[in-house]
Amino acid sequence: MSERRRTPRPTRRYPWLRPGGANRADAAPRPAPAPPGPPRDEQRTAADGTPREPDERSVVEAAVYRDGRRVGTPGTLAATYRRLREETGAMAWIGLYRPSEAELLSLAEEFDLHKLAIEDALEAHQRPKLERYGETLFVVLRAARYLDAPEEVDFGELHVFVGPDFVITVRHGAAPDLSAVRGRMESTPELLALGPEAVLYAILDAAVDGYAPVVAGVQNDIDEIETEVFRGDPEVSRRIYELSREMVEFQRATRPLVGMLHGLMAGFDKYGTDEELQRYLRDVADHVTHTSERVDGFRSALTDILAVNATLVTQQQNAEMRALAEAGFEQNEEVKKISAWAAILFAPTLVGTIYGMNFTHMPELDWVWGYPFAVVLMAVVCVSLYVIFKRRGWL
Image 1: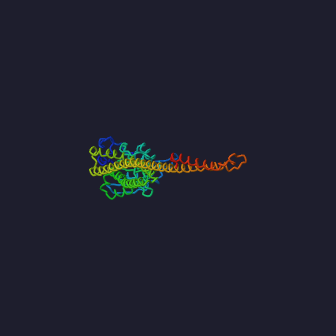
Image 2: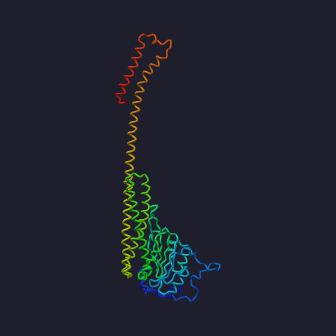
Image 3: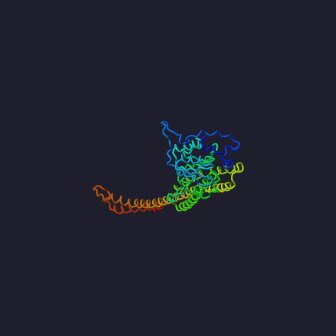
């Protein structure tokens, strides 16, 4: 047992972190502290006996707070552990960005974090959830931000470990901006003094507030898509599909939050949560519910728009096919006229060609009525063909 756990903690300060609703005053007494020796982080050694320190390049900021005031800003995880042990009734807030396995294992050893939660934090790509491991609350959030230039939604993942005297945040994306959360909490020490559960509220509030610009951006996209649909833009179907996929992802990020916050709210009376935090969390829950309903509405609207677009595309295709059919019909009428006149003109040409061969033994050459007969024959054939084509509607 490390020296950090020698000082008894209050039984009310972190009510919803008690495992199974048990009261810390009723819990079994802690074992006696170990004899003085080097801190636990200094005892970590590799197989060859050399000190083993985790790579701490992903530590964004680590700070120790007491009574809502920052009392230390250690530069490393090891220094944070030591400072937390030295400060009675203090709280550590450690922010990490895509940490290495060594860093998470160091935190797990120091704060008794469950291995399943560590695995989730390492792998990322988790659904939003709220789980309790002993005295530690493990929260997974899916933050979102709207990118104006590409007009798309960028999703990030945030893992939060909340214990009796620590808050550890592990980010796997650009959102949310936890530096703003830290600045807000440090500017309101009376809220920060409520402990890790107040920090958890502030993180939840920041993640939920980050959804508002996304909702506004998506609403603007849907308005533009509606205009493009009725304008007949050929690329609008692709845009509808891409935005629908983003809304599915957005729905996966917001819908579980409703149940998570209602789960926290259900323990208000049971665990005696501070009334101010109760009001704050109810407000966050209201915002989440509103956002979830808007996202559901967006999905329905996109489904309807896609159906309308399909109908308009079908109508346009039918109109084009009808125009092609009409053009083909007109072309066919012209071809029939040309063919009819070609047949009419072919008959006298055939007769004239035969009588123009001037063979010696052609019997009609010496016939007195040969020329009138040929002319009459050509006229009769032409008139007959004209009457036939006229009756058939070719002329």
